[in-house]
Structures are given as C-alpha cells and as structure tokens.
Image (tube, rainbow, N blue to C red; front, side):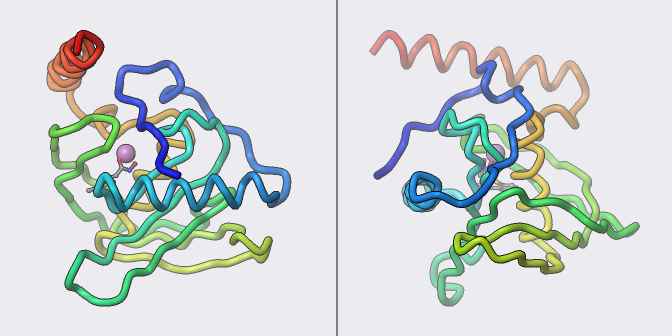
Length: 172
Ligand code: GNR
Ligand code: NI
C-alpha cells in the first residue's frame, strides 16, 4: 500500500532514526510499501522517515524508465564503509521538498553495507546517480536533508516555500 510522504518542514524529518534489530514481517511490509510509494511518486529513492517511520530503512531504484530492467533495492541499517576522495556534483531533489532542486557535491563513489530483506549482510560499491542517491537516503536516516548543504539564505527561501505549500494543501 502507498503511504503519504511527509513534506518539509516536519520534526520527524530531523530525527536520527534507530537501527532495526532484526527483520520482521512488519518491516517487509514497510519495505514493499516504500517501493510502491517511491515508484508512484515517482522517485529514485525513499527513506522510512519520509513516511513517518523513524527506523533505518531505505528503498532505491535509480534505473530510469526505458533504461533497462528495474532494480528495486531495500536496505536495512545501511552504512557507508568507504567514500572516494573524488567528488561529483548532482542536481538533487527530494520527495519531501517538491519541485525544489539544487546542486550538491558528494563523494563520487561509496561502498555501502546493509542487511537485505532476508537478513543477509550485503556490500556493494555505488557510483554515479546510485552513489548520490544512497548518500541522500542515508542522510535522511540521520535527520539531514539536501538543503542542509546549501547556503542559509537559499535554504530559508526553500523552507518558506514549503511552509506556504503546506498551508495551501491544508486549506484544500
Ligand atoms: O527522486 C529523487 N531524486 C533524486 C535526484 C537527485 C538526487 C537525489 C534524489 S532522491 C529523490 C527521492 C527522495 O527524496 N529520496 O529521499
Ligand atoms: Ni529525499
């Protein structure tokens, strides 16, 4: 089932999420709901706090439509174990900050380890958009949004736009 996505500013998007102790059926349902919500949005990633669940779970699929087979990835307790010196700049967006985009510089490659839905440890090195996306998602688990990398004035401008959007949505 699709779940509603929280819009910034929301105190739940600023919280450090707790690790999942082990994989349960509830968590597998959450993972499926997150993938469904992400594909429907549409987005290339989604973190559990964006649907109000303050646990360390992310979903990703950076394969764009028509670009090949889908690759739905769900990670429990993802951790970056190594980051490249080399950086990359991407124009980032966020489903919790609709229609706002800005360039963010991050390590170009990251090695990530996580637990999969069967409870197995996985590890993989990501590059390109996958690397950007997994870092953006892990930031969400630490209460950090891409606008936190921007200059305060630009961040404030975006936050004010989002407050207005939320007021308008609450009215109709
Ligand atoms: O859909 C999304 N697109 C995107 C584009 C560039 C960098 C990061 C992202 S993640 C975003 C979905 C989202 O908000 N995930 O938390
Ligand atoms: Ni996001």
